Amino acid sequence: MFQFSDITTDWTLFLDRDGVINYEKKDDYIYNWEEFKMYDGVLQAMQRFAQKFGNIILVTNQRGVSKGLMTEAALMDIHNNFIKATEAAGGRLDAVYYCTALSADDANRKPNPGMALQAKADNPDIDFSKSIMVGNKLSDMNFGRNAGMHTVYMQTTHPNQPLPHPAIDYAFKNLLNFAQAL
Image 1 (cartoon, helix red, strand yellow):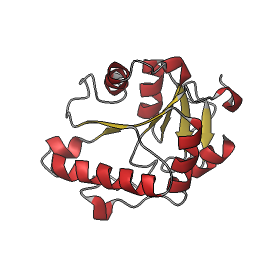
Image 2 (image 1 turned 60 degrees about the vertical axis):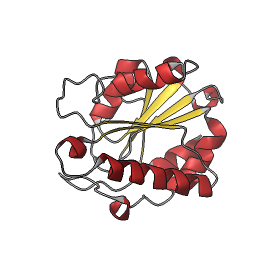
Image 3 (image 1 turned 45 degrees about the horizontal axis):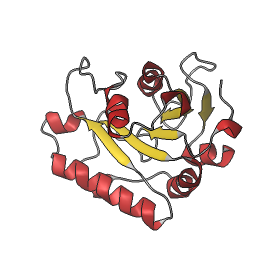
Image 4 (image 1 turned 90 degrees about the vertical axis):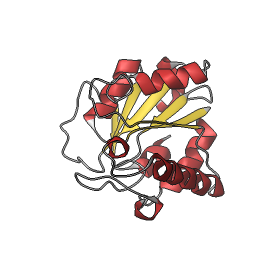
């Protein structure tokens, strides 16, 4: 298992969105920026991550688009506003990858590693052995494992996840707690 002291600016941080950065709606989707409510400390965490990681990448499943419940333009508006808020707080987000596919078999739908492979194709400097996937579900952890990454579990939405777990390297209460541990 990796140590936080191993992390240098040649490492990549992959972040899930709903339930990690913002409150997720139970059995529903965040439809627009007005519904996107960040957890306390997220912007502070993003500032800290910008100092520690060479790449910071958002990877998120967003079936609501393909279900016709929201538009891709609304999804992109959420991400653009989050990027602006992050940059205003001294942080950064280098790329956003999302999967709108309905089928669990889609190569880009977590836990399948397609979004990670897209990120590496766009940025060949990404080394999955020097990458961390942060998420709040086992599908996020399995996405990380399927791409050869280390994993950090957020206990925001499923605090009773049994630990230790083979797909989870570290677990934290929230994103700020993880950032502070770095």
